[in-house]
Image (cartoon, rainbow, N blue to C red; front, side, top):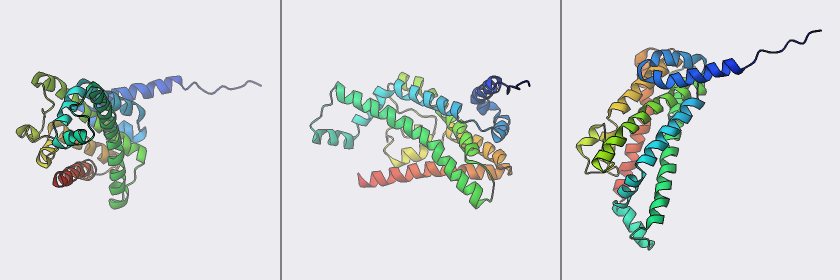
Length: 242
């Protein structure tokens, strides 16, 4: 009796990988087609790895400038002075650079996870929709990747200016306030890639949930936008306590 061998999984896996990689481009100009595919086959690994790489490149390229910006903050200087580490040596700067890289990358990776949980709550329970976590998470990862590419655009601008206080948002109007000021943080949320991310995520959620586009945008604001509002609130509290 002949033994029937199952078909090899190689070609299918290769197709999935190619589709996921193509999605990193499609999210910029063909989000509808991308998320129609994501609805049937959610893709997580490739956009997650791409997000990690892009964010790591940003922090590695501007790590020294980011550390210098932190050292210019009064609260950081006071803390180092109390610990007897002022002026900071090269070792302290290296440690701060590693912490900035690790912390910034972790925050960017956790962001899509948190927004996916928010969208799942509002979409499935409040709006009575039906979507799986992996589908929503995939949408958020592609949206976060789009935003992260916007961070790469800032690298040549920062290097040319010699400062990380550059922005493609309304925060460019108040560069002297710094990221510890609530007004700067609030204005930084009104930027090209912030709005683009919310629109793209809204398109994706409307497709995943099979709902009208305007409800998808609302769901995007309730998830991605709510996380931005939380950032503003935390900054405001920190500014009051300073």
